[in-house]
Image (cartoon, rainbow, N blue to C red):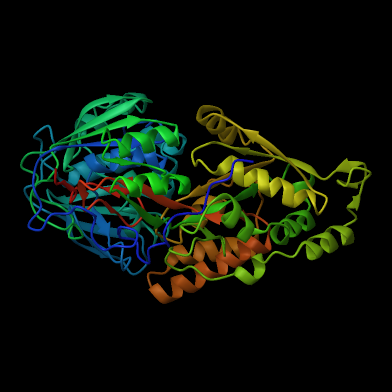
Length: 534
């Protein structure tokens, strides 16, 4: 098994980036930020579609987030929803109508003006053109969408046929970012070629799908989010994203000055990065932590006792200590700990292999000659489909495979390319999936586990859970909604719909020349405030 050395500094306490062991980057000069310069960034995976609405992976969103503004933003420290393209808004008591008052004077990079009609065309295109097949998250955020009414040129009323309390936070995401009419009029595939026109602080200067991307500063930009650290245009002139899959090569390029920042810095890379004057920037992802999602229609995973036994059969602390390092945390619920509404369910997820064995014994799964349990002639064996979107996936699952074998479960690893993974996921052609989903709102539980969401569990109705997920959409009372999200976390585990493993953290290697590289609330990079001092 590939083992990552645990040599990173401790996890930062907030969602804002800070240098490990220091509040300011090494080599940071005194004085105000300096405009200009080209930041060279090394991605660990190739960017896929250039359209923010169709972006899924963190590496792609690092790029697409920069070209699009959203109606609102979310403060990464407090979780509060704040103004951006919308100066203000009203939400109806039944959470079915959201009225946004747009900032005047905003233009897209093609010179056209932002209007309420722009909002209408964006949301219509997600629901009717892209659909959930191409814009999984965006379409789920717009579930029940009946249309947008243009009340006046700068006032858009967004309506739903059912309560949709999560929508205000969803309006802060890049998937619901607002693009120009010239983009929303295009079919889904043409929106992936780097011609997307947004109102964001950067524009596409070049885009090779699956290979590289170059962004240029938007001259005249002056409508940044209230969360941003300064007014006016971005400081950087350009950002050049290149794809370097090998961690050692990324680290070497950073240390030698060929790159300014890199994704997915691994623990063993820390000494080299820090030795060259750089530092590691770390933040945890909110949303659903990494875990195994069983297909309830396939083989032994249809047995609730098997799914229940998997929870105590995994030693999550060993996964972090052996495979990852101190910048990662064990999963302690079906939500990650940085998600609003998170409830600590670590007692449910404690390592107890004897308990797992007892559950399987009582359900009639008895050890076979090779140690793998059997019931009615069926081996307790299932496959888990996964991609390499996170560098540690294979190593984590190899250790989980060993842990499960000790209680009599045969876990088969099924690594897949991104394309194969997406195709099989869409067809629901798997025994189980392994992945995580990032969002700074507890409604991600509905997206992942709801009957009207992705439902990769291929489950039927679960009345208690279905009522809870429906209920959290119907209340705008923060405390009441948090209580329902807490109940949903418990019910997901009770029904064996998710077998959590670890929480994902974003770990960025940055040179001493880079200042104010920040994360937004959903742990994606924000380059607007970033500047270079070299």
